[in-house]
Image (cartoon, rainbow, N blue to C red; front, side, top):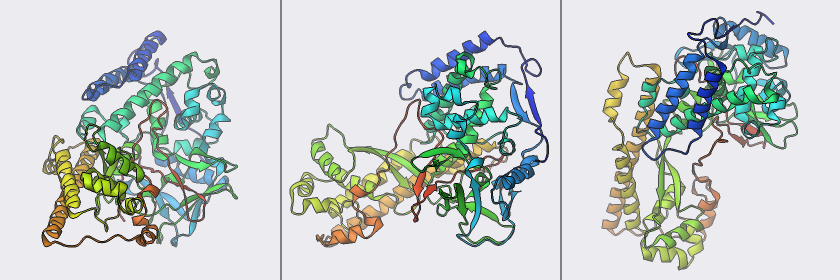
Length: 567
């Protein structure tokens, strides 16, 4: 299969700046685990905690300098081996080649004209690295006895990747050698880069990601030294933070969910070759064929020979792309920011408002999203704001009035206002709330644009500032939209315009238009928080029109430059 595996293992005696005793390292790791497992800091102290954790990690990294397993040469040197291995194991490799696309990094280039919806890529199950292949590997005995690995498939995949990387005869070596040696996820940011995110909505997720990764590393570092089932693992004496960070980032930027062989549930997987595809706007075009037991991808659009082949990673925000994939997508049609809203329990009308919201299937306190396009709010947020701004008489009408049950179905429909006064209130509230959120940032949009013009700005700081600016632009648009809407409805009120009259027959209209579905049937944009078993390495799964399991496609997103996708 081409070149021999060229592996260089550096150990602390030959390349490290200092020799560290096992006891000294164990003490540092124990301190890190204790710090990362302590209760969450009080509001405003998260950055201080991050600096403390980062300080301990840097101490460990310094003492581990030179302790790592790396492949010689560049990533590109191994692409021919990857293609040969894929071809020998039943993957399709005739319609594309791996190529360098500059700022977008490596991707797939068409070697012939490919029509939209044409099947051009398939990868059989035996080539995938999955939780099941980890269970059947040298990692199996430890997996069977460790609850963290059993609960967190992403962590299992990261350890599986490290074990196979250390195995000179691993079946997956051609794939592993083709992976980047470093990533652009925030786990690789310098402290100054992370500091650029202070005040943004994304910063808490970045800090949590670092804390959870450090906690996992410390936990498994101790486990590998003490658990009998780990005695034969190649990681036992060669498990550095940098190695674990690399493995976590490899999984985080690539993992996906596929069905198990019997189709009864889903499992996490790394999908060689397919994960080289870069992202663009569009639709999910990848699914899993259970009959042929393989991952299949059809073309998102027509591609001419020598054009780059793109796929759609899913409806992810730029915060999700930066944090989990390591790139910023400037033309993201699905970009959004979170906004947490709730009815105060001390409010006199709380019980009535909570009841109307409950009938609509909406919590009295919830995290919603403001979107980058028009309208900036979803049907759920429109319904919430309408109830939030209702008077006592309006609440009574929606609770006890004629056709009250049916009227609840109109709350998320822009065509049926509660009243002109209610519309004015809710859009004024949105305008004001977005403007207040803008004031929490330490810089203005103009200052961010000026910083981005500096030629000496680091790559990761540039990513952080672009994300920060994108958040502000969404809030600015939402505030402007709120202003325009409240002026529009103010004019309606002044003109004495009649409210659109709701009839019971309008229910059919609501049910036949996806944008106007009854609120209770639509999924809320609620953000859930997790603990130690939180799945940091997001994967999604859905179903296509044929009922097949559909993969929410993951990013390559791993080159030295952020991938700036352009059609």
